[in-house]
Length: 178
Image (cartoon, rainbow, N blue to C red):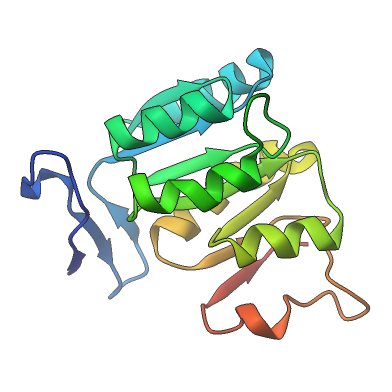
């Protein structure tokens, strides 16, 4: 069992990320997840999917400013982040969240699928990107992949003629779904 300490507000070991690498069984323990999306219907859908899993503690925010505030307060293990947010867009939130919740992993869930925007998201430190139309099939696999410390590129996202993640992101193991 490999443990990686995560920064928690009270400094307790209760928030340790434990990943069982031996048998590929996956993620063990409980995880704080922050869902930041301005569309209430989609945010509720994502939260309801996550709340079916006992190991996920879920908090939500409806705009970028609130997302940053809750990230600082909640110290999530994972942030599910839309790009088109009011007050502060998701790309700007990703830049700033590194200061308030430095151990949080970022998974973008967005309608935006242009290669430039997806590349920008990864360049800002995101470990995953899911195109919203594929969320029903990609959401849980993406979360499990990120919690194991690997990158995830959702279905239908391409980065050029070969469909591969750009070389600058190749240092982290990637799961590509097509």
